[in-house]
Length: 295
Ligand code: HBI
Ligand code: FE
Image (cartoon, rainbow, N blue to C red; front, top):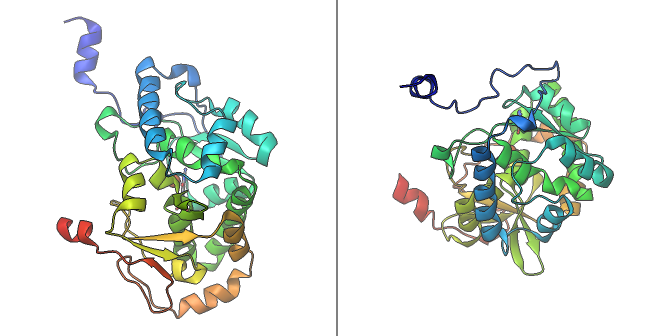
């Protein structure tokens, strides 16, 4: 058994080989694009091909347009610096490599300065369908394209500034729900019906179908305070998806003094993800069958 085999036998491929990367004070690292193996590039291409097939008629048009504009394709794992050179002239955003989730205050500071922190590692073969941590496919394929959309990119910067205020006010949990039910799992109206825009859905081929076509989940019209009162689950499909009318309307809904919103939220009860409430505009009431079968 030669040295290489012995090495492979002893140390299986680490899930995230950037965990020991040298980290800057703002938690960014060197993506070291040259270090990606042919196997990792191939994994990106397979994830990309599968998702683009599913998203052709399900992603919102703004997402599909941005994919072309940013030249995201099956050409292997993107070099974030080069991708940023295409994105920055469009919306002022850049994509910066990080090892994993960064502390909230660091995250918000990046967003407030139009820098999107993206994981540099790519998921292992054993987690192609679902993984808990945001890898480069979730962050770059899921989150980055819409940063080319003017209203959405302004919303993301406002979210960063709002996050810094929410931290000071101790209302991060409520604000994180806004991010969760829009940026991660949001649906948007279009001329041809409901479409996907949340990154958590887009980067999962199975949830891209479930979120639009299953009769299990509720689909409820977006309302800022309703969303900020609603709990969420992080390790399965959503029981409720919220629908915005447009990115401009989402931005408008959030351009207000959150202080009074937080005052009201402090005395508002929490809504569970499988519930609907009387003031909801329910677009489709779910059977929750998928979740009952799993329980
Ligand atoms: N860090 N890299 C990264 N990506 C995220 O999406 C992220 C994070 N840190 C905190 C965080 N998200 C959430 O807790 C905030 O939205 C509240
Ligand atoms: Fe995400």
